[in-house]
Length: 210
Image (tube, rainbow, N blue to C red):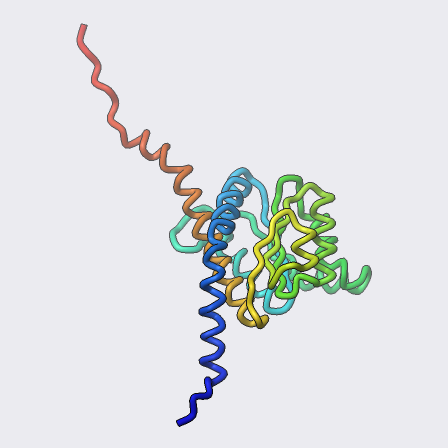
């Protein structure tokens, strides 16, 4: 009987091993979710970008924030920069591919906003340019990348680097990170709303006669 592991089983084994190591990063995603709740809850904006599969993951994040993750809540401002095909193709044509995200950051970003960049390699030139533009404009830059060290990690304020042997597994764990951030975001909003709810529910003190 053959003991050779099939490619499908090998993929699952790699994902399981990487997930075990990634679990230690949970505090970083919690911190990001809490920070996003403060920024977006205060009228700020999240800008997100990625290339290829990372673009899909980035757009998944914005969909969860503009729509909802689990429970109903207000909509929040989150823009996937790569999703504006007219802008990205015009910028690429007129200014070069490396500027497709940076120019949009300059247009949409405001001091105090957050830019999150997703990359399996951590070396995409257009994401590095976007990080530079964001820091110059006063945005906070977060990077969700593959194995460390990498240039995008070095060019960001904070980074979460997934240690995995293949881009596919990195992207799968990026999706896990996206959902962890969303869960922390919703929890932070709930905590902020809870005291107000408690105050409304508390009965008024009885007035003594006299």
